[in-house]
Image (cartoon, rainbow, N blue to C red; front, side):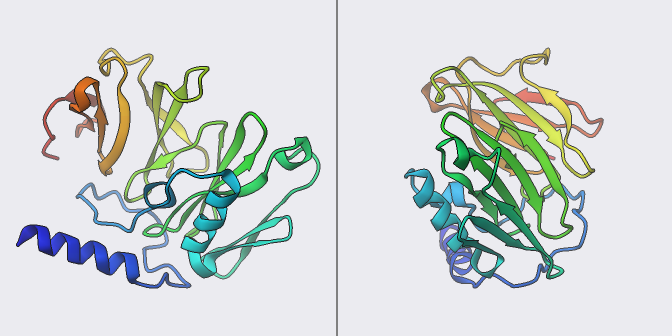
Length: 232
C-alpha cells in the first residue's frame, strides 16, 4: 500500500503541468523535513549529447525557458526575463555549444545555466523565485530539495571519477562554502559517489559495493558521516 501511494504521488508530479508562476514562498525556507519533489533534468533525462540534453531540459521547464536563436531566455516568477547570449567570450565562440540549460528544478524554479565550452563549462544558477544569480565557476551544483544548499563535485583528470565534494549555503548573494571533503576531519570513504539529497540536511553517497553513506548536518551546523540514515 505504501509503495502504491508513493508511485501515485510520483505519477501526479510527473504529469502535472508546470505553473507559469511559482507556488513557493518568495524566499527559501529553512525547514529540514524530507521533501517529495518533481524530478530534475539530470534525474529524468538519460545521458545524451549536450545539445539534445539542453533541448530536453528546456522542454521540461515548459513556458519558463526557451532557446531563441543563440539566446537562452529564462522567465522569472515575477514575469521578468533573463537572457544569456552566445557572443564574444562564450563557449560557442571557441567551438563549443555555448549557453544551454544544464538542469532545472521544477519544485523550486532553480535553473542551472551552463556556457558549454569544448573542454569545460562555466556554470551559473538562477533562482526563478527571486531572480538571484549565483556563479559556481566550473563546478555544476546539485541543489537540496528546498534550494537552501548546493553540493558541488570535483573530478579527476578523466572527467568521470569523483574526487572531491563541497557544500555551499546559497541563501545569500554569493555561495558560501560550509564544508569540503578534502579539508574535513571526518572523511568520506574512498571512491565515494554522490547519490542524492535526502532532505536539506542530509546527502546520500554510495561507496564500494554500493553501500550507502550519509553526510548530515547537526543542529550546531556541523556535518557528520554515518552509515545509517540520520534522524533530523
